[in-house]
Image (spheres, rainbow, N blue to C red):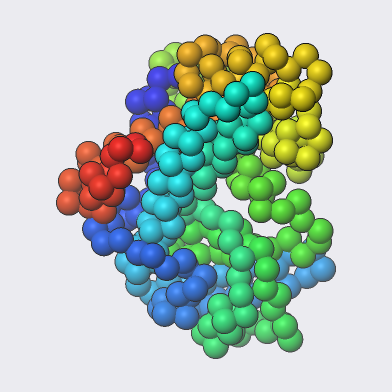
Length: 308
């Protein structure tokens, strides 16, 4: 896949205010929500969903917090990728799982650059939301905390928080669902020039085919679970006939072999798809560091270049 062209397609979806941030932040958005200047425009709680709309009055502190979160995930991805290349004798289980986490962190990084994240909202944040209500709308007696999806519209400066009040698949399933949505947006972007972006369109379609297992179920966390808890996939030394598959997995993680199995739900295809995500995250970060030489991305790139 031509990464430069993918970055070009991703460009309009990335919030420029996030990648151009100059100062680092170590706090999470939910921990500092009470310090942001915003008005609560609406709170709607039903049996299935909670939706909260916040109108930011000053987006700069939000950009800094979001960039801080994003860059931590990028660095975690790069450090974990490097760890995943450390071979263990006749065993590739933890290498494969760490390779998964490197991609998972990469997904969180790229999502945040587009103003999207998955996070837990605590009661302190809920209190800040309730005390910032403006306008005439029915105020629910209680607002639940817990896992929320955050989506920021840079045009309107509205931050929307969405919670599934029914049983959730957990933060991993939520993150991969959001990643599928971003892949779909990238696929739509390829239509600006169907001829030039035809190979990328095909690659994105194959990647999406691999990602989706069934409704609200995604292959990457499912395969990770099979390796981690069911000892399946040929990654553990004690699995039947794993002597050949372990070597193939290790060489794939190290970049020595290319696996052409994008649509199959196997540890081999997991690694192939992981590497695509990791490479994209790394390339976007490097691009941001080059685009804004006085920004925090350049400073972090220089500080942690041994991993990047």
